[in-house]
Length: 356
Image (tube, rainbow, N blue to C red):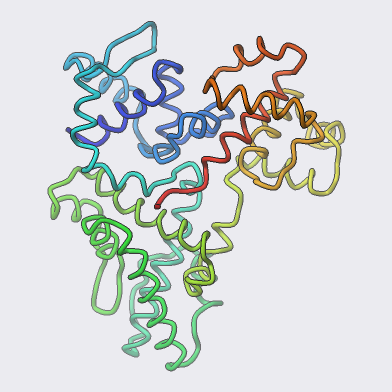
């Protein structure tokens, strides 16, 4: 079975009828909405966020129809699907094959992976050619920002280059050992160097007998493992952190929420920010929830009392209610914003990356 279909089935199994297929489509294609970002954490499907970037609505609906016809999923109600026993058995039987997906965290890293890869691949290519004193090579990356960053960080002497190359080799080797051999080889083959041009995804797919989508996902799983590793232990990956740390440390917020976060850090109150940015109250609340979920040290104490926060947390962890209405009915004195902020913090506890 094509990996796109397996991913859709696994998401449907985890969501278990709580969301319509339109919401699932937004998650899979990486559309940054307050709901898709929250759902990715609440249902613990962070790996699948933006996993099928570029998938059209038509192709998505076609896959759903196909899975229904083959009785892997069933239609529960309008736009709501449940995985069937046949589908569940398939996922259980093949889970070891799709194990590499656990290294992915599209929710955290999809927005930065392209920039990070540009810097890393250009640095590796430049360093490899410099070690052989070959400077007349055609760079695989022509992005101006990536080139400028590599130029600033590039070691100046032969001795420094040898030291950096040796350390970078060690760091990548440690991380690649945490990944399956197929994904690791696809990643390594994408790198260019002296007298070597990196493989395209189509070449890797043909070589391994995979779909292009799977080849891309396996590559991304290694890239995300690199991000996770250097975020967790920057002191162990000094070269990689120097290259990519600045990009990885950026909170995975929508552009608008990031602007709101910067104003909050300047101790602007909500009314000021709404006036400065001409925001509606509902948009401001969405930003607060997004920030609470993504920024570990962002306190929600100004918006809800500790005892209410603890009660909602206890209710959530006991019932695992992913919808707001049941919680609102249990705590009618709280606003939906207060409940969403607590759930954002609860969801954020799970969004710490994959790879262990």
